[in-house]
Each structure stands twice: as structure tokens, then as C-alpha cells.
Length: 87
Image 1 (cartoon, rainbow, N blue to C red):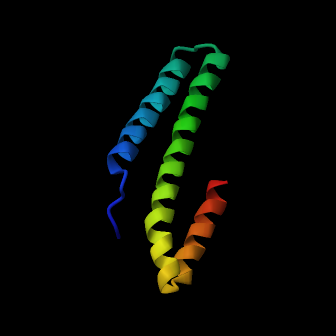
Image 2: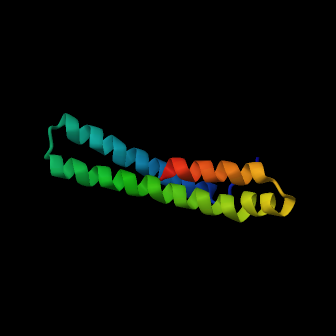
Image 3: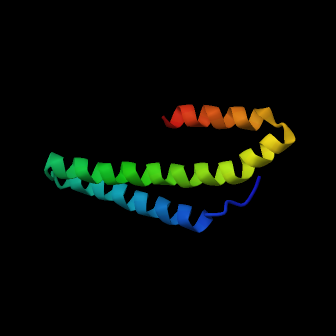
């Protein structure tokens, strides 16, 4: 386990994504226009994708570089599996 370099940024983005998602629920309860709901869902999706990018970059910069240097193929395989599940 390691400390993520961008922990504060990740936590801020998680809070922002949660706020966007809560807004979607409120919009649905208020029977808002579907187009508006879809736009808000797009904001949630973008925030989640950006979170993934930050975490992936951090993982490559630290865990994967260390894994390659030490010949730890299992860590590289786990990254490949994680990328498959993200896409």
C-alpha cells in the first residue's frame, strides 16, 4: 500500500461527483426535463472519468514503475485487468 500523491484532489473530485449525482436524484424527484437530467449525468460521468485518470497516472508513476523494476508481473496484470474494467 502507498499514499496516493493526489489524495486531496481525488477526494475533492469524489465530493463533486457525489454532489452532481445528488443533483440528478433531486432533478428526477422534481420531474425535471430529461435533457437536463442527461446533461447532469454527463457531468457525473466526466467527473468519474477524470478521477480514473488521476488514479491511473498515480498508479503508473509509482506502483507500475516499481513493479517493472522489480519484475512484479502480477501488479502489471492487475493494472491491465483494471483498465479492461474501466473501458
